[in-house]
Image (cartoon, rainbow, N blue to C red; front, side, top):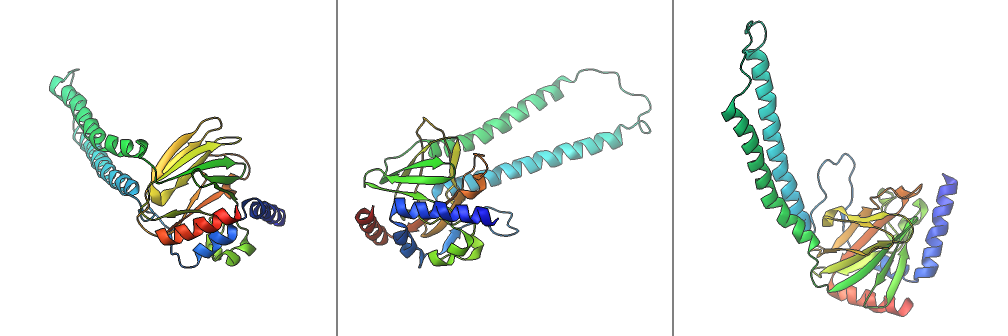
Length: 274
């Protein structure tokens, strides 16, 4: 454990040297509420911070209702058949082999259900996959085991490393954010359309922020895209979501959504230190 903490500290130190902007990210940290993070014993979704997340949450709820209704119906049907047609009640089994109306019903009804689900799920999928014109474009590259970010139109780039336990307080976090918080963060203004260009440098990684409802594999040699427009200021955490090696669990993601004024100030300072 001490060796892992020491190695993590080395990565973080290297990130500070290469990025030169971790102090800026820390300054933004002080007045922001932590909104998107996993909670102990939590069973639901994180608070939705984008239109995409709200749509995904709503679709999940609708599908849960449909699946529950189907499960209860099938379970009840099985129980009714087991009771009504058991050997004691029905010593002489029926000999028919076909029931055309029933066979048509159990073919048509599932088709109708699937068409109904598709009518609501496809627009949600298209909303995720149709990338709008970006206010800010950020290229994110997954490495073993950290993330690199480049603000494409601004000339700002940095790496983002896991904070060790003894570094959390220095960056404005508590021990509850261990394995979630990073030394540098993606900083974006609230309400802006952000397009992330996602790729990998070595193996397949996956960039995700649950509260934004976004997830995209980072595949070496390919440049994929995702987009979001955060509606609430705060700090949001994510994790690499594709098994990528021994330290897969130690490459978190931190996104800070701030006001436009705060973002402009951060960007000016980042340009001065990058």
